[in-house]
Length: 342
Image (cartoon, rainbow, N blue to C red; front, side, top):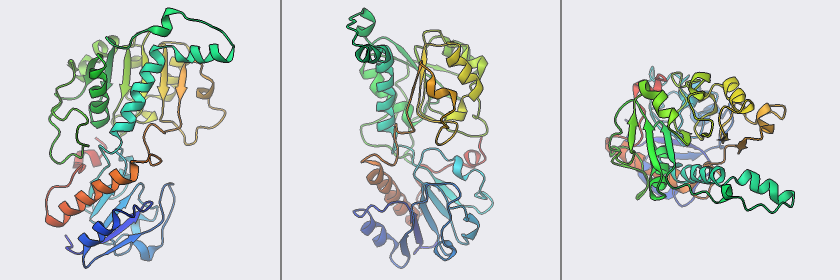
């Protein structure tokens, strides 16, 4: 480790955080370059050549020009943007933005459940048609419903915390018993389920039929890897009740695209909310645009446009920079298995 690292920040600057970062680097340098937010975007070779630490949303397309890189701090909880890079070969540490988006995405999840439970799509259509309808379906309470999380990371844990305060039953499908959040995981104080104790029931992957069949709401909170791409297909979707609602705030391709389209078109379930997509932007001819049983948002449940994005992301990076320079374990460091897409 270089005790005086050269740091490159390829994000919008957070002026209140930069003095502390520069003070930590001492004899090194801190450069704020262009915000790399598009695949294929390159930065000048002379800017990256001698960089030890990279803080970014996406690594630049000319990744091969880094000659000294030892650590990448990503802003996103997902990390598919580094899986095809020679990270392990070059022994580069990678940390993600786990925990920085938990609050806004959890609130979006709760909003979607309420929207579906109170039949707000129909209520809105009634407004536009000047129909005065006070049917009981518009007065249903969400309390007592069962919400299930496929994956139980930070976003799921914060959504579960909110759901439990509202009286919902919480189920989780995970590969193991939810563990206590490690001291090396970034988490906003007072949020989430740090001890992993909130779910009323835990299911293993072998119990997926029992899990899916008992849900009112299924929320997808898995990272996208080679192992999770298409993990939900026709077989899994047909396990859901006809009255169930599927909410995906993770990544689109976790659900097999054609099976998802058929699910909505043929009404295997009541409906779905989707904030993540199969193309960016979704082309205007895509059938999802016109699905009457779909609420679709353009990846805004939690992102770089929020007022808290930069402060929280820079706070995480600053804490990690302190740890990096003192030789302590980094927050949110990805394992070798994760970097292999497992």
